[in-house]
Image 1: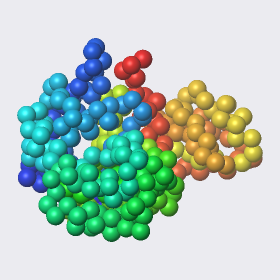
Image 2 (image 1 turned 120 degrees about the horizontal axis):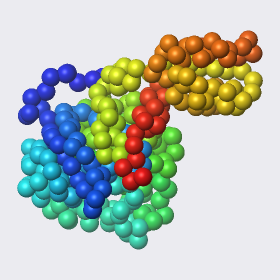
Image 3 (image 1 turned 45 degrees about the vertical axis):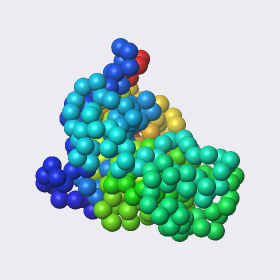
Length: 314
């Protein structure tokens, strides 16, 4: 699934170094380096308030970095922002189209803004591609979350951008709509479109070619899913059985235990010091529970990274 490891500058849709943004005395994005290959789906993870949206806005020309250099689609992120905007599709967290206009009218308006040639045909292609043709006259404000998502994606694509920046595009959308959305994203990437997407859904992150984890302005890890999991060096045990709540209380703050998290009827206990964690488990385990050492999942790593990160607004 992962693209080849080596990439030349011409292979990169995003190539930035030391990108920094401050608001007053707070550094919201701190010296971020990021390289995203053309045709790649790059997942951007991190807790709320980590600077993900600010970073995306710098990439698409809506904000100017206070420090750092680099390019987006070959254009300088500091001096060629107008050019970047013409070639990027940006889907914000909040639905940002006109709720009192129909789907077709919204797409026609966006096509006018970008001066899309043969606008009527372009709108129809967008309607057909995203399955919106039969609803084209429906008022946007009456759409469900999933259909609003399709409209927003169609609007992002109408000017045929080379890069999509998607900021938590599936928040609040049902599982079927999320799956259909991701099928479309993979098809777009297969056709050569580059996608940078922020998400809090671990199943979505696992569908990305590569990942980066940002916490409170700092880039903590990046790479393929396998590389991110390996770099965490996290040992995880899975426990099933009765009275897991009491067991969780017993385990917390013990030597080697960094996190105790309930996953349905299962408890995950994790830590980076495998020997100390194993010793603690040996001291408390009993035959009522089934203990298994498992491969740490992305959510285990996500929580571990979040716990160790320092909130820059605290």
